[in-house]
Structures are given as structure tokens and as C-alpha cells.
Image 1 (cartoon, helix red, strand yellow):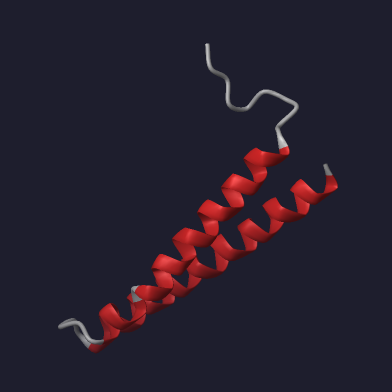
Image 2: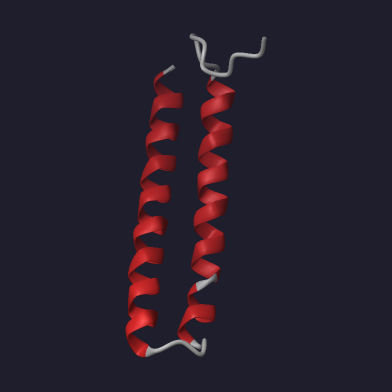
Length: 73
């Protein structure tokens, strides 16, 4: 059976996860104008932007942590 979480985890897996996190963050950054120029109420725009910035920050920090872990291996 395929076990993705068995140890030791390969360095390439951490690098792949970091790249995936970066790509998702880039897509979220590209979604900012869609929210700003959308037909939503102003309050909903602020809520969506706050959520989006939180997601962007968390994905970028997680990608950084994956890269640092990969360098330590």
C-alpha cells in the first residue's frame, strides 16, 4: 500500500510541497483584483480580502518552512 507519510521523507517531496504552496499563493494574489472590482458589498469585499490575505500569508510561510526543512535534510 502506498504510504506518503512514512519516514524518512525525501527532500524532493518537501521541495514539491513548497512549490505547490507558492503556486497557490500566486493564484490567490491574482484573485485580489477580482474581489476588488466585483459586485459585492463593501463589507463583503473587506471580509474576502482579509481572508485572502490570511490564506496568502499562511501559504507563503508554510512554503518557507518546507524549504528550510528541506535544506536541513
